[in-house]
Amino acid sequence: MTKSEEKALLRAQKAEEKLRLERERIEGLKVYEKEYEKYGLICGIDEVGRGPLAGPVVAGAVILPKDCDILYINDSKKLSAKKREELYDVIMEKAVAAAVGYASPERIDEINILQATYEAMRQAINNLSQKPDILLNDAVTIPQVDIKQVPIIKGDAKSISIGAASIIAKVVRDRLMVKYEEVFPGYGFASNKGYGSAAHIAALRELGPCPIHRASFIGGLLERK
Image 1 (spheres, rainbow, N blue to C red):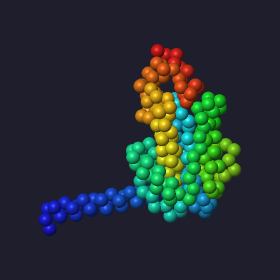
Image 2: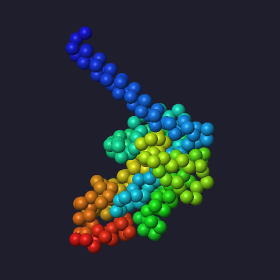
Image 3: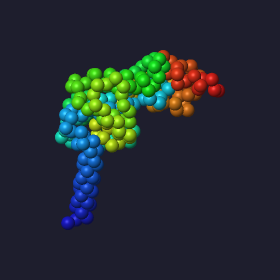
Image 4: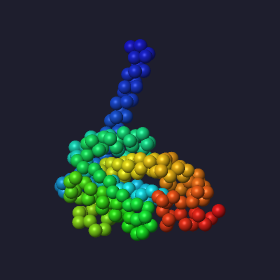
């Protein structure tokens, strides 16, 4: 065997081992899905956008097939933007059902961010093409929902269903914030996604708030110079 052939073989072996480890990791993310499989349709729920100064909070709801073979699902924050986009397409193609819900900045100001998050989650559940039998939620218990719920702390990194929901919500919200950059230029929404970066805060103080800023989040920032 030549040296180039040896290197090619080594690369193939490393790739195969990496794939094996990823499959093991994904199986580990199905522990809650296996625990509650007797309930039938299992839906993961997660939200994105509770902390930003601008834009909506977006919730994702995803029902994956029981034999789900999608690799690389994880907490959306641990994935690159490119990988999230790739996984979004795969999840939307293979999911039994997937949907999102929104709560606008005005609604956040009106009822507070926690209640707005619950509202977005309920909307996401209602937007599903099939009603789930059980919900696996990232940390919270959603009020006014007549479906059994299992809150899981850091669930987006522990459950494949919640991880998938976090990816759907993150991609949808990020795409929306990129569009908002075109409508409300100057704040850097395409890059900061509405979060309070130094450049965003500086622009906010210079330009004043735009219609998608959350008044209940920015009052103190505008007062301090």
